[in-house]
Image 1 (cartoon, each protein chain N blue to C red):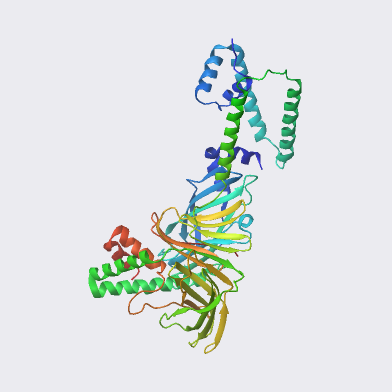
Image 2 (image 1 turned 45 degrees about the horizontal axis):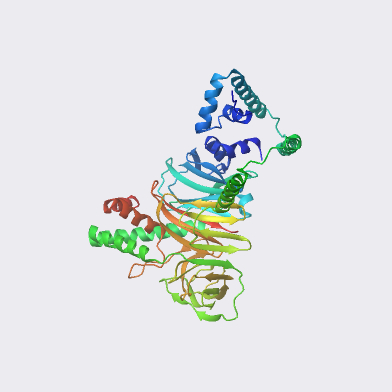
Length: 188
Length: 351
């Protein structure tokens, strides 16, 4: 009998499998006592981990623990590579390489395109030093590097904009409250 | 980054609401005439994007008037100290009519962008000022919201009076004409298309140009002369010579500007001018336009006297002003969405 790999069982136990893979592991685990027990053990471990995480003492610094765990994982991976048997090169290797390169390109492009921007296409901007306030159809945004802050006006039909020497303003009628609302963001 | 934060990145839907509530702190000073009756965070969400977290906060606050006077305006100060490095934001709702004991809604739609490494300090929301029917004011006034709210309230009274007179003299048709003219004027206003930068060096090719000066009838402060440095696409360092032609000392002047290419803005001038005295005021800013810069027009939008009273322009014979007031914007929006009867109801409410 071909058993699913252990990581597939772990993913299934955590509810992280989707579609056909999920169906296939569930079907197998239902008829295979050995894999069924493995799934149960993964579930118990997950529950125990969640309970332990809830009971972490206040003030515990997670970062050093996380760094140590990452380091251990890397050591484990390198050790397993060192003792792994040499596998003959698959005739599909170059295809896998192309697929991997394509996937990497998609991820990189996606990452670049998702460079965070709070509001689209500014109509006007006010800048001083390294900070900029932008006015757009969506709102008034203050932005500096990877940090930003915006006051939005999602329920406005008509917006009147204004800029001054140190900030920007949007004035609109909120269609839900019928109140005229003025949002202003200033650099100082 | 805490364990909870790590999990939140992976499970944005499940944990967004409680974490969103942690991201904002609403705190009104004790003894304030306004209190928070309820707060709803429905619709808030957190989503990872690139190397950052985008936190959408949708707050619906219900505020209660605990004073013995009607409230005409409220300004909330919004601070995100770790995000905006000293920058401030405000949400103002003018043109209110809140009786003692009544509640009213305030919507806050914020979007925060934080590095994925952590959420940081929460955004603080507090009261900066409350303006009452008798023009009395309460609040720390850190944003000078008293001056702004007082000017907007005086403009609101002026504009309601104008539309009430249009109704009285011309009947419903007269009021409709004014509403249509107001909407047409707002539609005809040029879009905002300008970049403002402070302290920018000006090109040597810049030439000094005269600004067009608009007389907003009866202003206690006169712009005697206005000049600026102009290149093809930039207008820099506008300089004004202001004269107090009234009888009361002045401590602040709001100068409005507009051009054919941009709907405009203000240049707040904190200058003390005694009656009969003249003073120069220069703002070290550069306005950059996407195409050739059109001539700039300037006018006095509001004046604050030393005693705290505020002057706003009156409507001239033609009834139009360079900038529509918040109240005119509200009334014309009521007309557009609900019709003339709703505008007449609003006008009578304030009589």
